[in-house]
Amino acid sequence: TAAYYGNEEDVGRAVRESGVAREEVFVTTKLWNSDQEHAEKAFERSAKNLGLGAVDLYLMHWPQAGTRLQAWKEMEKILKEGGARAIGVSNFTARHLEELLAECDVVPAVNQVEFSPFLFQKGLLEYCGKKGIAVEAYSPLTRASKLGHPEILKIAEAHGKTPAQVLIRWSLEKGC
Image (cartoon, rainbow, N blue to C red):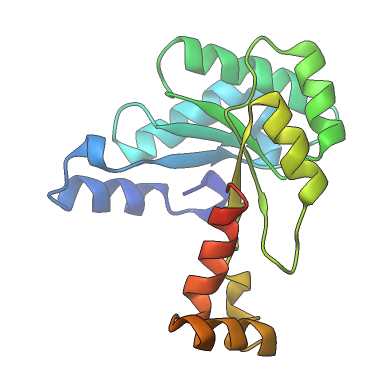
């Protein structure tokens, strides 16, 4: 979920009403760009919308110039106070991460980036690995745009799998 997506209340309600124990569901939400100047207030709003207590992962949605370092400091405070079990970033390049690492006390647990065989960010994956930052793939299924790609179909057929299974397996084998 993410503040920007407008789905925090619905996700929180779905988790609460699912009958699945809260500790069995990993909940991530994101700090939106325009909220980076007031990350703590934005987090409080997100936490209230979710109604689940602590979130498992709180991500900074984009590396906004001029606000990302202050936002990260506030996210470190949220982590220290137990509002989030982990904090991370989304859409950060190695340059953005270098800047953050030079100023922060907490290394991001995660860098969530678009990642698939069609957008293979090998250098970023290697950089994050060296820094102990997990790479979380978003859109590993390419928003379904490449499920019919001839090479993906060929691999799927050869292994008796669906194109979606092939794309997910690829990301997993790359360490995402």
